[in-house]
Image (cartoon, rainbow, N blue to C red; front, side, top):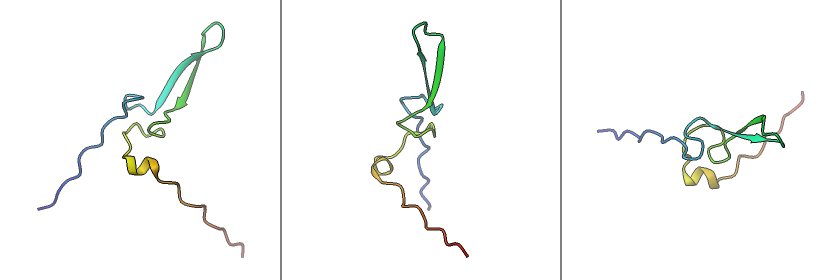
Length: 64
């Protein structure tokens, strides 16, 4: 019998949308939207293992 992986949970910081909005400026009329730093814009809660791992090094491109 195969085990199914649990369904991913939504990010608690951005509530699953992957973006964080905030008002900026003196008059507070400027709305800025940024990628959520907790989930990297995926909207899903990342495993601790994935958050601690470093991205793979870039591959070298060979010119022919």
